Image 1: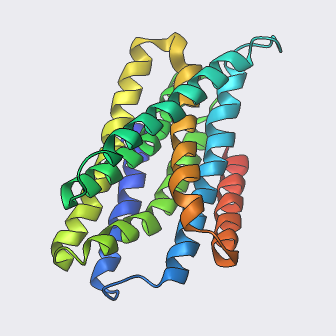
Image 2 (image 1 turned 90 degrees about the horizontal axis):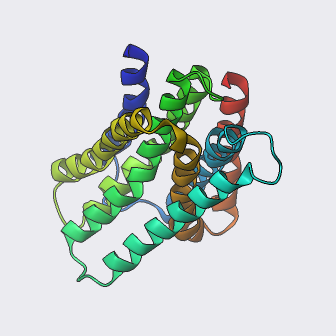
Length: 240
């Protein structure tokens, strides 16, 4: 239980560190730095989706090559379409500060779900090892540092540095909550574990494709993506 508690709090720690940077930076983040950070986050999330979520989902679905892909495919599609639907709903609402904050929270939920699902699988002794679950949590925590700083700095034109920090911090609180809910859900309904893994992957991939990659377009963003992808891949392979 101690391992689970530490593991699900690592991403929040990363978000907090990132949000703290608002006290040491200018009113607006340099566009080049922002592209690098978003590219880095996209790389981490893409690698995490593949090695920590999709591949274990397939491994847990049996050895039949004609059916083992079904849970991974179904969960992935539901995850992407679900988050896409939420984005469409939010886009129709009148833009204000509260809506912006809510959108950030919605996009952080998949990361929390992925960590919770990974630890639930590890605690059950399934395909994912405890070290692999920690690798995923650490990877998400690392990419949450730039993510937390971006959220807080984006709030600066609307409020003080102190309030901007708390908004950045609170945007990450949803992740451990989602992790705990994922663990509880999977313990209640064990057969859906492969679907949950791929669902979290699909939701994370939607954030990558819809938000992070377009914002990190260009050479510097691509470099950040490469670094993030390689770091997460190495973490997962070494610790998994």
